[in-house]
Image 1 (cartoon, rainbow over the protein chains, first blue to last red):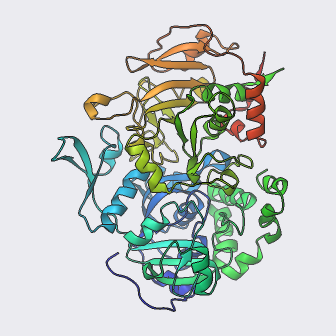
Image 2: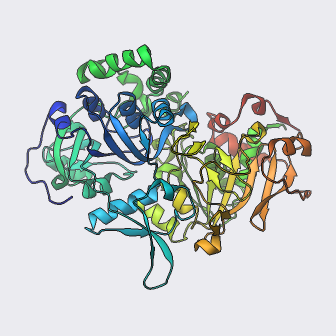
Amino acid sequence: MTGFHLGTDKRATLDEAAALVPSGATVALGGGLCARLPMALVRALVRADRNELHVVGSAHSIDVDLLIAAGAVGVCEESYVGFEQDLGLAPAYRRAAETGAVAVRESCCVTVLTQLRAAEMGLSFLPVRGVKGTDMEALHPEYRRVRCPFTGDELVAVPPLAPDVALLHAPIGDAAGNLHLDQPYVLDERFAHASRMVVTTVDRLVPTSEVVAAGVTIPGHTVAAVVEAPFGAHPASCYPGYAYDRPHLAGYIAAAAAGGSQLASYLDRYVHAGEDAYRAEIDVARLTSWSTCDTAWQELFR
Amino acid sequence: MSWTLDEWFVVALARTIGDGEVVFHGFASPCAQVAMHVAKRTHAPGSLLVEGATYAVDPVPVFVPPTSNDLALHRDATYRMRFEEFFDAACRGAIDRMFLSGGQIDGYGNTNVTAIGGLPHPKIKLGGGGGGCNISATIGALTVWTTRHRSGRTLVRHVDFLTDIGHRTPEGDRAELGYPGRGPEWLVTELGLFDFVDGHARLRVLFPDVTLADVDAATGFELRVELVDGLLPPPTAAELEAVRAVDPLGVRRSEFGPDELRRTFP
């Protein structure tokens, strides 16, 4: 980021938050795999009809896939997009990569991390030891081989990555945008400091004293806007609030794989109908039952 | 006592972990994930486990869920590394072993987890490699595995896209590339077990219901064979008990096709 975001009241609506993310923006998505994904913001970007977004990050799933399914993405620079062995390949991502609808510039977690650090430090590059000899290098003409002035080792220099915006979700945060996260933080901290601004949702907006008592993970001075969006990570998990919604994810994957009218009905029902209608569809009792006992928790995954 | 192929497979992976090693698995790796906990509970109590996408150190999972960034994997862990803390450790050589798989694997142990048909025109876009591209170069040793050897499409002469580094790439070997990691040490498949000699895979043992002809028919790279006895002993009662306790949901089974899941022993 080039500068801090001052102010004590950054509360916004989802529409106002989406307005901060123009088409074509480089967007870092917080969380990882199927945990703490900024899904309410993703849905808001689809409703705002964004396109040509350049998404960057580590290992992701429905956040990236839904954006691609809705035609919002031009370039994908994530290290992984998929649903692991549980639900398999990401259907929209796979189709868009195979037809060329999205430019795939797959990256590696370490390379992305190194590029974010270069941006955080105000440097024009940092080196990585790996990548050389792999096909990842040809995919990224922006990388350059350099020689270490001290050891003579040949390393791969990678440019800074300063996303236009980092979209995050947190269980709690205050009006100034101070956020508490539970581990794993994945790249959320690095995204916050490397990006020009953080736009975030929180399950619960709370007084500053409550965030401070829990521990501030993302400081408010990196945050431009904060939206209270209960279940804002759903169908990803956001513990301690709620677990991974496996039936919803399976339904999404079936719709995205089918495309056409099935995908359109998913988008109508879960995205275009708005966030209030979306929340009304969530089986809250089921997803919050994980904490009642280990058997109930395990049942959520069957 | 009887056991299934998926159980024996996980035990074979577990036995590649030495006591006292620092071990890591990536996401989308249920067999490796279960194997690490089996090793810790049996022959490698002194190992240090870094749990996949949670980066928790030596957690005792409530159960293994089918998604690898889940609280069930690290509840009550005393310490969770930050993402960057783990990857820094892997890059500087502090991690002894990592498990890697791939849609394609060549005889040098290079893996393709990016795209069948390569990029920019993939025939099948796979999920992607996570952090493997960099850390396969620097982690001490790699255990490579696949549960899809029999398909004939997995062990190939050339990978369509080289995501993670084995012993040798078209640009040179590890020494020439300046990579400190020792590279793939084992390749475990649902048909048998390979080690690596002179940087190339060598078949050492078959599962008892598999013939050399089966392996020959399924292997695209040059099949080098030097079979030995005693490298794949049956699982012990303690190992089987550990597999079943760690993975009550049977998440490991999601890696296998239905025919492989029907294989039982002895």
